[in-house]
Length: 283
Image 1: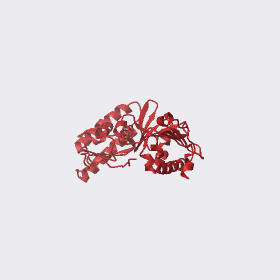
Image 2 (image 1 turned 45 degrees about the horizontal axis):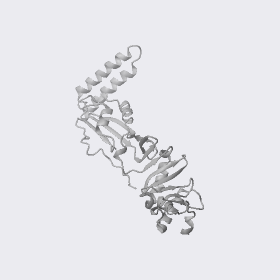
Image 3 (image 1 turned 90 degrees about the horizontal axis):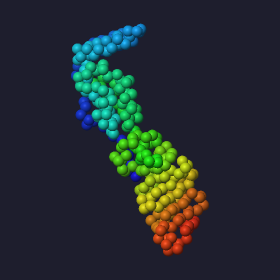
Image 4 (image 1 turned 90 degrees about the vertical axis):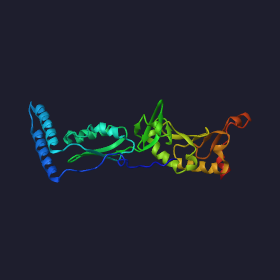
């Protein structure tokens, strides 16, 4: 099963982190904007909307006069979210007054992006907007009825549009599979001899799992004791080559036996429809 790695993608985006104005100018600008903000907060009554609009215009004009305009946008934590998506979300262009960016409103728009789990937006005077994001880490592809989605380790749907970009991820199928996927896939990953043969993991009745292997064999796992059953399947397969034989179903739901249903060729040759207690041959 492919390992999933995180990487910081802020570097290489072409956005620089730079402060190029004198510190004294910064202090003057900060003081001016603080006064304007205080005026806004103190404004009440019927004319507050007009006054607030005027104050916004005044703040923008003051920022331009003092050179407090956006020259750089820096981003940290970006891997799957595109630069264009972030720029559209913060709604700022080079040369805009830095006071135009409302960090709270901009953060809410960034948080609405598919891949973003958490975010912060800061104005770094005199000329930089910094966006820090934490993204969802893709865990699996979840198929539920006619809908196919990309989910993270918490079972949350990340996107319905990015599935084709992650063909290496395991697939889980059925109602409730998304929420239960993390723990189950961790069990599979600890047994690579089986995990690498799994085409899809099927959630049955929101209480147990079955495996569809790459050769079409179905393995029914018990509701409890999944780890034990997977270890036993590994052992039987190592000694008997079970999952590569002409079998259709390996049923491990009962604690005291493994039931095997033969494949098409076995049924044609008159083999019993069910050969039970394969476990006994391995003990």
